[in-house]
Length: 340
Image 1 (spheres, rainbow, N blue to C red):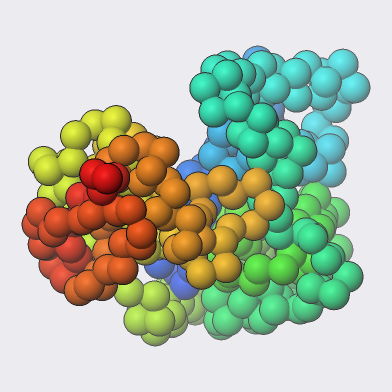
Image 2: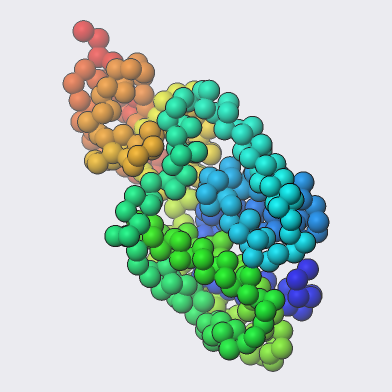
């Protein structure tokens, strides 16, 4: 849509040969879904369908919150394609309505903490000390994931391609903003990669096909190297979730003693899920409990399931527990109030 068929094919080849893209997209990371909604919003805007773009924007809010969800608006402003304040406000307004269709009933059900987390704490607690947390770590990840594509990336700097400026500036502003976050997880920069891939694809369309093929192969090898640093735990979580679904009834309260099993949450299809931690959660993370708070949770709920890799558990005073099953190194315990 932006630069023609040849540039689009080149951009696709660049994108699928970037390390984090292959690793995180294949593992079901939510940032990949956010990236899709981001691109869809921008594409629909270019197609002059602001209503549909607003719906896509709102769905993006649902994935990672409104703060990150506004990234396509930044790109639209930078690109300036038939931009008007009225259309821009309409876009954001429709997005807010779509977001509200989920947020309002969720707030009614879960109360003030839910509203605080998704409206007033949209940074998920990552910007508590922005000055002290600033580092260039995300730019290091960028260089690592681009690998030899960085050659074409540096080539962009020497070109006077005004049509690429919105993509490059949006990517830079996004990554720079992340640099103030107190968490430096490398997959956070995924939304910038399609924009960089499109920019590199625009330059690469003029290059020899053999050179491009060599860069793609090199990128795939680099992706394999990086993937070995991040084993696919989502597959384990999915299998464990399917197993737990046959044992734990829907609507039960569950403590999942593993922070990474987002796939488990989907495939288990249970009710309220908590994650235990020695220090507790960040501000607004009501789902994270200190271990010492678990006995009180059992007292409040009457019965709670605990899914854990630990062979033995100290349940605490006033709580009894029994191991119901075991699967792939994880035990499923049922805890209940101890009768006086």
